[in-house]
Each structure stands twice: as C-alpha cells, then as structure tokens.
Image 1 (tube, rainbow over the protein chains, first blue to last red):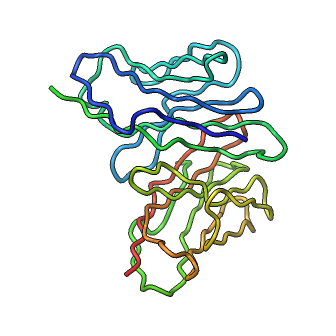
Image 2 (cartoon, each protein chain N blue to C red):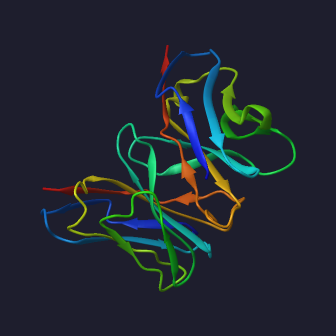
Length: 116
Length: 112
C-alpha cells in the first residue's frame, strides 16, 4: 500500500538560504510523485511531478526535486529562499495497483517560514 | 475559464444536522477526490471516484457519504454520524494517475 512521510512539520530558513523539504514514500510498484504548495485558506497548486523518465524534475518558482528509488525519496529543494516561499508544502503519491487504483495520498505537510 | 468550484466557502451548521458540500468541475476530468484538512494532519482522503456512478472509500470515510451521478459533480454529505466535522474540506479532480490534481478553494465547515 502506498504512503508518504514528510520529515519535519516546520522548517525555518533565512531569505537567500537553501530550502530542503524531505519526502519519503512507500510503494509496492513504481510510484507517481507530486509536490504541492498551499497558501493560507486556499487550495493546493502543483509545484512539480515525477512520473517516468528523468529523475531530476524542475518545477515552478525555482523548485526542483530528485526521485531516488534506492532511498525511496523525493526531496524538494530551492537554492535560494524568497519571502514569497513561506507556505505549506505537501508531498503526494499515486501508485498503479489494483487495490489502490487512483488513490492520491498526501503527506502531513511541512510549514515553511522564511526569515529576513 | 476551466476550473473546479467548491461552494460555499464558509458553512455553519448545528450539531446533529447533515450538510452537503458542493464540488463542480468543468475540466472534463474523470477522477474526483474529497479531502479533509486539519492542522498538523495534512490532507486525509475521504472518498474518491474514478468514473461516474462509482466511488471508493478513502482513509476516513466514516460519517461521510458521496454520489457521482454526473461527471462534473461530486457532492460530499457530512452526516450527523461524523463525530468531529469541523474542518477545512478540499475537493480535487484530475485526468489520470500520472496527471496533476486541480484543487478547489475549499469549504470551511464549522459545526456548533
């Protein structure tokens, strides 16, 4: 069965510093992986996704993530944090199996605070 | 404009009453989802539907019900059996497994 774990419910970074948000997944088959961002009292919007092919995926707003099958990880990074990056970030997984077909599972989220 | 619409944005109900949250999409997506969001718990899947007239329970389906009579619509009913219904509810839709989900703006339900 699929699941996703986000390490760290809160992350504080200085403006201009590296942003690193950790996501580990559990899946019995090759998964499809997603990162979303949520601003207060709004829905979620996609940052990037991994389906097949290149394991380093680039997304919007300067974010990127690398799929590492051996580590079952899909960590999100951004080289230089901006104040506008303050938000909550969610990792999500879907796997193509008969018992969870179509299920889209999210992690608990990581709240990012950016300090001047 | 294509998108997914949830209504209302805020909803207040008395304890013991059933309430239905609306979710409509004009993206021609096959799959639709309902999530509940509570602080520190992320998004928890309530129900999902891959096609019309079919839906599956998610991880926290107890006290909730859904229908999928039309491709565009996936309403969620929060019944009186749901012990702690106050939460932020999000609806989403997507084409298929390897595509992104599009989210509505959410409905904040408060039960008093």
